[in-house]
Image (cartoon, rainbow, N blue to C red; front, side, top):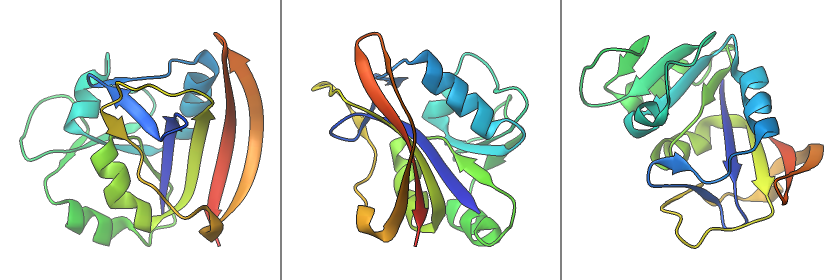
Length: 157
C-alpha cells in the first residue's frame, strides 16, 4: 500500500529551488519515525536534494537514468505502481510534486504536516485533493521558529 508523507504550506507549497520550504525539527523527527524500516520512493530531484541516502530505509528513485547510490532505480512508474499498489507492505512516497500527483489516486493514507504559512516563491506544490473522501485525524499541533503547524493523517474512506 502506498502512503504519502509531506510538509505543505497554506497554498500546498512543497519546495523551491529543489529544497523544502519549511524546515521544522519536529517534522523531520516525525518523517524519520514514520518512514524508518520502510521503502521510500522519490523522484530524481528529491534524491539529489538529500545530503545522503536515508538510513534505515530502502531508497527507491524513479528516474529515466541509471546512477549510483539508491537501492533501486525504477524506470517504469506505471509498472511499479501496478506491481505494488495492492501489497500489504507500507511504501512511503516522499516527493517531489510529480510523484505525489502520480501516486495520490493509489495512496490509502496521507501524512501531511500542514504549516500555517505560505511562500510566494514556491515552485513545487502538493496536488489538490478532495478532503471529503478522507477521514482526518489531527495527530499533534506544534509551533517552531514562529511557524504553527499540525500533523494530520488522512485515510481514504
